[in-house]
Image (tube, rainbow, N blue to C red; front, side, top):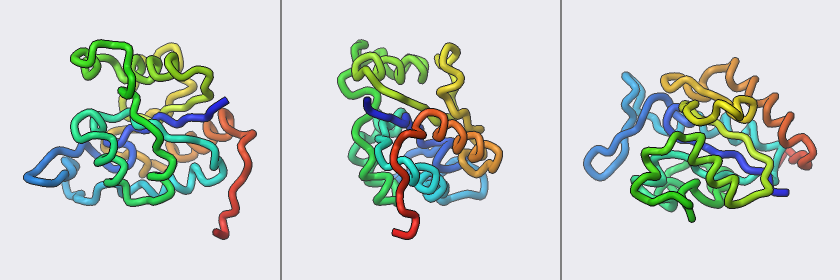
Length: 171
C-alpha cells in the first residue's frame, strides 16, 4: 500500500499566499520575501519515512504547473518525492476542479488511486470534515513555523506511517 502526503504550498511551506509578480512569484506575507522557508522543516519531518510520496494539493500546480512547482521547491529531497498533483487524472470537469473544496480534491485522488495510506498538510480545512485526523491544519500566516503544529505533524506522521523504515540522519 502506498503512503502519500498531500502537500499544500502556501500557508504551509511558507507564510502567507504567494502571487505572481512579473516573471516570478512573491510572498504576500508582510515583511517576508522568502518563499519555501519551511521546506527544511518538512524535509526533517519526512526523513524517518523514506517511502512517503508527495502529491501536490495546491493552486500552484493548477496555475503554474506541476513541473514549475516541483522545481521551485529548494529541497532536492522533497522534489524527488513529488509524484503527482491531485488534479492529475481528476474525475471532475476540469473547469469545476478549482471550485471544489480542498478535501474533495484530495479525496478524488484517493478514490482514483486506492488503496492509499494518506495524510494531508494544508492551511485549508474545507472538505476534510469526515477526515479531520488525516489533516494537519496549518495557520496561513505561520505555516510550518509553528512549533506546536510541527509537533502535531510529527505525531500524525508516526501514527499513519510508523511502519516505514527509518532513514540514516547522518547522510
